[in-house]
Amino acid sequence: MKAAVIREFGDPDVFRYEDVAELEHRPGELVIKVGACGINRYDLYLRMGAVFTDIAFPHVMGADVAGTVVAVGADVTGWSEGEAAIVAPGYPIDPADWDVRPENHARSFEVTGTHIWGGNAEYIRVPSQFVVRNETGLPVEQVAAMPLVLMTAVHAVDTLGEVRAGSRVLVQAGASGSGNVCIQVAKALGAHVAATVGSPEKIETATAAGAELVINYNERDFADEILGWTDGVGVDAVIDNVGASVFEDNLRALRLGGIFVNFGLVGGIQAKINFRDLFFRRHQLRGSFMGSMEEFKRGLALLGEGKVKAFVDRTYPLSDVAEAHRYIESRAVRGKVVLIP
Ligand SMILES: NC(=O)c1ccc[n+]([C@@H]2O[C@H](COP(=O)([O-])OP(=O)(O)OC[C@H]3O[C@@H](n4cnc5c(N)ncnc54)[C@H](OP(=O)(O)O)[C@@H]3O)[C@@H](O)[C@H]2O)c1
Image (cartoon, rainbow, N blue to C red; front, side, top):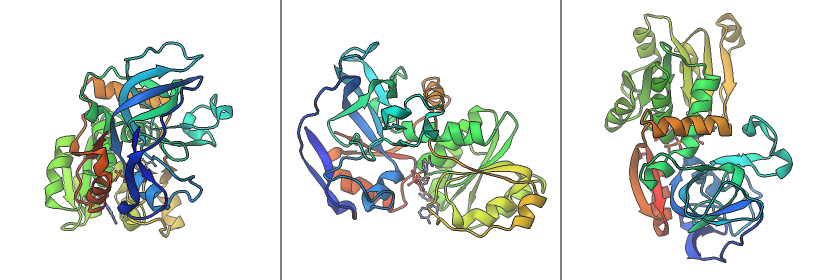
């Protein structure tokens, strides 16, 4: 089969589009013909060697897969060839962890395509319990844009952020692949959402996702704007994928007793914390990594109902994966980029 392979860590030029051995059918697994595979910023970090250094080469990454079942392994029940399927964007890779709930708290839980080959190929092989039937009725590239960000958004916004009807929420990087879906999930829960963006072109993307207030942080102080929007109170929850560069202002924008959820680090990994403010202001700091299968299915239901929509900025043929990574790195991307094998 054709695959986008890496044999070393580095810039996008490390990708090679080439023939690799066909996947064997194994018990308990489904082989899926990849219809489309979304890219996440995680893939860029993985390619650079910034997440793990113990990746065995050659490697094929790719977490977000929608496609068609082409082979059903022995012992698998409930699946047939030809069914439309969506791969979980993360799962515990050690079978000893398969009973751990929530799945994302298992020690061996990882993003799909990290140590085991992912979806930047014509086919992918996945344990059947980590595959969900695609009942969305949506075009395959739209479905493939969503798994990782949907799982993340339901976990970060609903479960950890405790966002409810009437909550006021700040979502950082509202035009990013993940931020955009966090806005939509918060809206679906009935919240009022404010979001930040870094350029005028991205305002429309965050607005279309449902943000009532969109702040270009290069033009205005976002914490001041949030305090104005909330009559000086601050938001109930901050959903943050930026990290260090906005940490202090995020807490300034958060109300007394509010919940801060971080799941990303594009703006740096280390920030200073003021403990006096932390306890005086009763802030709750929560770290979020991916989500459970139940949260993933809840997200897919929102997608199927049209309450959350995929925003696909561009698609690229799989052979142009390097170009696709460069586009995301350029920071011009709005929403998602998807590869078509
Ligand atoms: N923990 C999890 O479960 C999880 C899940 C999904 C994503 N993430 C993390 O969330 C972050 C965003 O991921 P994504 O896939 O949504 O990314 P993305 O679509 O590539 O968007 C990233 C956006 O972040 C903004 N940004 C702010 N400061 C930046 C900086 N210093 N450098 C680059 N971009 C900056 C940019 O938008 P503006 O121009 O508008 O500022 C940029 O377009 C990443 O750290 C990713 O690893 C974590």
